[in-house]
Amino acid sequence: MINRELIRIKIVQLTYAYYQNGNRNMDNAEKELLFSLSKAYDLYNWMLALIVAITHESRKHVDVATARAERGEGEAPSQKFAFNKFAVQLEENKMLCSFLENQKQGWEDADIEYVRKLYNQVVESEAYQEYMASDDDSYEADRELWRKLYKQLIMNNDDLDALLEEKSLYWNDDKEVVDTFVIKTIKRFEPENKSAQELLPEYKDEDDRDFARKLFRSTILNADQYQRYMSEASRNWDFSRLAYMDVVLMQIAIAEICTFPNIPVNVTINEYVDMSKRYSTARSGGYINGMLDHIARFLNDEGVIVKPMPERPERPERPQRPQGRLMGGRPMGSGRPQRPQGRPRQRFTPNNDHYNNGGYNGGYNNDRGYNNNRYQDNRYNNDYNQGNDGGYDNGDYNDFNNEDINQ
Image (cartoon, rainbow, N blue to C red; front, side, top):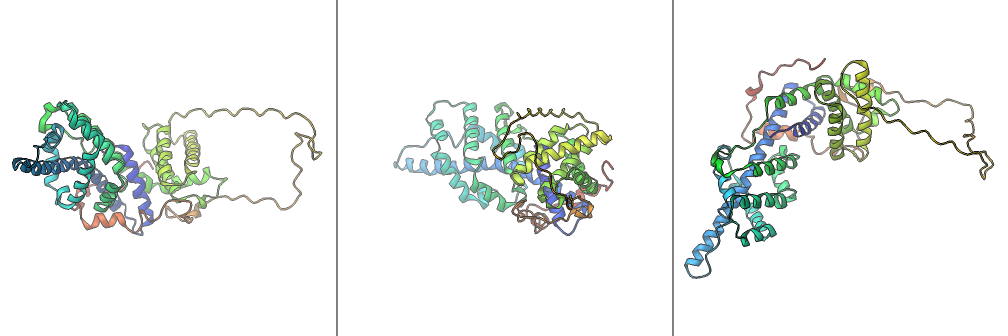
């Protein structure tokens, strides 16, 4: 389930936090990265469990209505939604049940009021009304209902996003990606698999776990070299005035370009340009795109990498201006008047003094860059160290070594 898009997002967050925090311990930072990725998988299971919790709430309402009907106070309620075939299969799923058994609390323990609120929204929805009025009693119709309800009521739900962020700071930016995998899981369910239906695994294969470790280590351990590439490529810019998040994004992108020969350059550039639209300034995307393209071509020319690069489009020649006279009397096409002789302009030349020990030392402007309040003050470390989410065994990663990546 944990794909490379999510891995890149986590590495951006952890790299930013690594430079903001005073204690720069590489091993601890790597454990934090892998722990935060495991929390994304927990969120995936948690969102599937929300479907089951809403189903349980529905059954409570059916029980109350049935009791009233037995007393002659109304008609017997329909049990169609309460025993939706897809929801029942998910409720009995072995992998999901195993996950929930290891949790201290479930949706119905800590957040029952929100579950009730969401159930009421389900009942009022058009998709629910059409489903209950339909004579289609097939498994496919039941599964399709939950796909619609999830997309309409659970995705892009600000109240739910706020609730999840209170439960774990690691889930701050995970839900958008996790939602896509929940929808994929709903579509994959088949009735013949019953309780043995497989959920998505935490990692598709071991390569993705290695991708996370290698990319993060390369980003941090080779920071000086990557920042020199950026400094050389930005000779016409004041490097120290770049948005801090732009520097972080480009540093990680260069690490990916240099460390993973099988990932095309244009794929890497596109990924980090997209992230700049989310995390940095409105103008960052174009700047990062141009910088990374220039650096990748330089690395290819120097033999540091061997990756195909698209040809640069040729600039069309400007048409010649016709000769004539302007109102001011100066002939068209004659150019600007010569600058008076005097002291020549001074050009800023960046150097490595803008960085200190691999960290950004050029200042950071909140009006231009990334919101500093989101990842500072050890917010990730607090959640990680307190162990509120079931704890974390540091011994799981004692075998990690500290060798440099792609020196």
